[in-house]
Image (tube, rainbow, N blue to C red; front, top):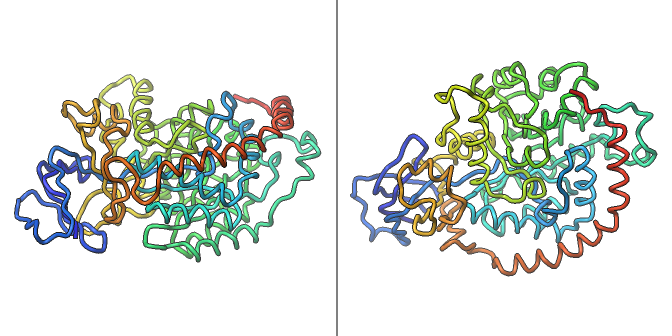
Length: 477
């Protein structure tokens, strides 16, 4: 039994208690939250004095790619379609040991930044996926893995006439639709529900990168196992054009017609979504994951968040991979989201608020992961995924005026003191408890050096592919 006493408790953005106590039972669930001062400390095996500190729900990162932590800052100033050549070569050379340590490095960063849970979309074989889940298991983090799969050749995912595809693209091999679905299902059977904090969903890379059979097959399994269906949708203007090129209709409409737009569906980016498509997705119960830092880094555009808010669409937040924005800091993402969309509304009364953004990173992301009954807010019966902030560690929280606003607009992670997942303390005094951070960083330096050497050998070929694509890819308005 654990007692967090005398804290400034953010149960949710609209429920804050001063000098209150949180009781966590021996199963890692919140048994009580009270400010009535009736708790007997002697009853508990562990007491945390949160006097002068802020106790809040753990943040949730609803879209990331763990493979990218070793390859951050290897490329910049490329649109996604060209960047994909870097991404593909960065992934192909990673062995299970690389995947494990890559994942561990990102998990350290997330936990130290107050993120207790993530949705990871990783393109790897079964062995690689197992390695990533072992990392999340070892460090004590909550994670949902959506294996990223595609059954199309790269040039078939773009609005380019087939005869313009180079020979290497025409001759490239793809894995069969059935193999991909079977692999994802077997992986789910092995890992879904492990320690009641590790889960598995289905992650078709993007509609244009998958056959309709793959999309429909993934959704069939998603519904059967009552999990999530997570994909990239309308990230770039080219993807919007691709939808009309491939389907003769908007992307969301096609997804709806093949039965892939429902309450299980979450879609990362959605930058080029129209109001009509957002309304349709909202009606079907699908949800969006806003990744403003990556969208800016890749020049993909600015998602119309105010349009989404207007139609009532549930929106969460994600950092995306560290190679598409630099880090796994969701607090930074929250600040960007809170600032970026004010300029698109002339009436300041309708501007997005810090409280809305806080909800995106907590309760909205919990709903995206279909775990709103377990995490996202602090309430009796929910899992104790809790972050304790120490304002004395952070200038941005001195003095405390409006705590939610200060977290969203100012805090970068310096104040993170204690982090717990299902009641287990995984970060204490700002340091990870279950892994040796120094060893994680040293291992990352060694393994990434070898990986980057392999990648660099292919840079002339990669740059040639990028130059060719730039010649044949239409940039339509």
